[in-house]
Length: 82
Image (cartoon, rainbow, N blue to C red; front, side, top):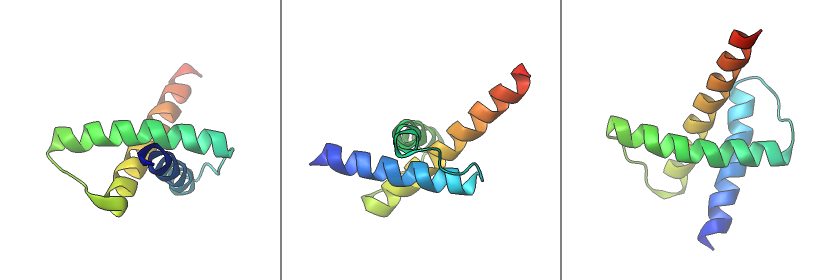
C-alpha cells in the first residue's frame, strides 16, 4: 500500500510543480515521473538542510519542492544548450 501512496503523492506533486512553474501539465506519466524523482530529490534536499516533513502533507510538500527544483534545473540545462 505504501507504493500506491508514493505514486499518488508523486502524481499530485508533479502536477502541482508543473502548475507552479507555469509549464502546464504535459501528461499524467510526465507528472508522475517528475513527482517521483522530485520526492527523492526533495527528501535529499530537506535532509541536507536539516528539515524533516512528516505525514501526508509533509510528503506532498517535500515532493513538490523537489519537483520544482527538478523542473527549474532541467529548464536551466535546456537554456544553456541553446
